[in-house]
Amino acid sequence: PDAGIWELRSRARIHTSSSLMCWAACDRLGKIARHLKLDDRAALWAERAEVIRDKILDNAWSEERGAFVESFGGSTLDASVLLMGEVGFLPPKDPRFIATVERLSEVLGRGPFMLRYEEADDFGVPEVGFNVCAFWRIDALARIGREEEARELFEELLEARNHLGLMSEDTAFATGEGWGNFPQTYSMVGIINGAMRLSRRWEAEL
Image 1 (tube, rainbow, N blue to C red):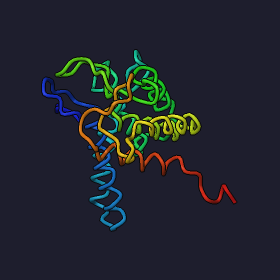
Image 2: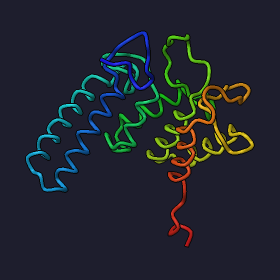
Image 3: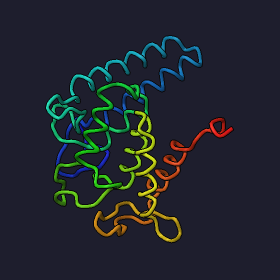
């Protein structure tokens, strides 16, 4: 158990996103070892990755919510599980990933913005959008084939930048006012990643 990606102070759980990153680390170590022709190490890390993968699939999927949830055996939703697509844990067309993207958009989405999670934290129920989560949703929507929807959300989200093109950590839904750290690096990285994900290939324009 840990405090999770959001560094929550009041609870420790086996967070799905933490387990996902452990899987990604083992998976990449296995691939690096295979590339270096270190067959014994490749087999070791591949086996570790498979164990973690099975644990996530067995314990993080909720039939009740129709989505992967925040922690093993839990029932609340958390935007960080959208990273499953980016790290390659599941193929984009996997029905469980598609269902998760749709469910999170429905529950956590607020127009172009997105909550980090639905459960109250140390400061109460979240009231503002966490901008990097909105960019994770855009990436996930594009991966499952809903690129036009992703592009529309991306263009709306860009309106939350200031006159210098900088973006804060959070955005208030009603006013568009920037909250939290400013400028926030991972919000800016979200802009770059979103633009790259949604850019049309040069070949398509020829």
